[in-house]
Amino acid sequence: MKFVDKASINIQAGSGGPGAISFRKEKYVPKGGPSGGNGGNGGNIILEATNKLQTLMDLKIRHNYKAPNGMPGKNKDQTGAKGNDSIIRVPIGTIVFNTSQEIVADLKKEGDRFIAAYGGKGGRGNASYATSTNRAPRKAQDGLPGENTKAYLELRLIADIGLVGLPNAGKSTLLKTLTMANPKIANYPFTTLYPNLGVLKFIDKEIIIADIPGLIEGASDGQGLGFDFLRHIDRTHFLIHLVPTSLETPEKCWDQFETVNNELKKSELKLENKTTIVALTKIDLLSTTLLEEIVLYFNKKGIKPIAFSSFTEQGIPLLIKKIQKVYQDNEQT
Image (cartoon, rainbow, N blue to C red):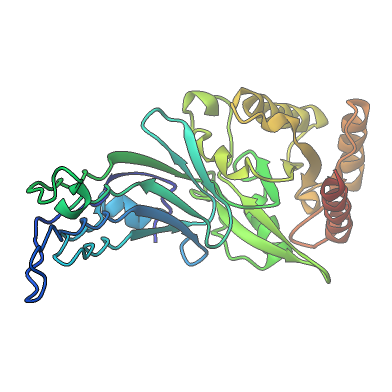
């Protein structure tokens, strides 16, 4: 199933039902009087978060939603039935924007709800117009129309950790190693076209990790896959920045590290301010001497990276220990 993280929908809440014009006609009531009831209110359009959906695909396919109208008022002062609310289910993590592109709802938890369009109020029946000087009014009110608007939806995954790096930095392989997720892995750029999630399990907690498509220089200008997917790591507590060591020199490793950092700084999400673990990947492909040179080079720049190999799992326990510590530190702040 294709991953869809943006959608816009047209929503029409139900109109209120008209009020009724009616008079009492009971056999032993010589002076009947008005008895027309009010119309029922129209149904609302409600967005509800559910963990049973992972994409906005359904809303991308179906754009128009309408709630039922309220029923007309009845005689004997009976109010018409309210129109049923229309429930539109969306994935957890869906943000709702109005037509002015302002955030009006952020559905973060299972069952979170937002009324995106209110139903119209039912019209008054003639019984409600009776006064001491007008005891037999012959007028009733039409129901009010329901709200008719457009909602813009954007999915931002709920994850604790975000993996960032250039294409082929080893993000998907690390996700599989840590969480047993099954992302697509291959030896060519842009294997990951959509975000992937995995769960790193500890004894007392589960940490959700998000792997997003790789960034390249110029991503902010639309190069490669752009950096539209960065929104999926906006909610994360911290990042793991993966830098491949399968290069010729420490300087080239640092240049790749800086390339991704510069693109993060250009994002409106201010991701460069997040706590970040810098991790050197693919260390099984180079000599111990070269690895030491790369680590020393990063140290001189003020960075203390963790080196590991997802293939041999060398350094993976140390990385997991670091993840646990940083996660706990972030929980306390």
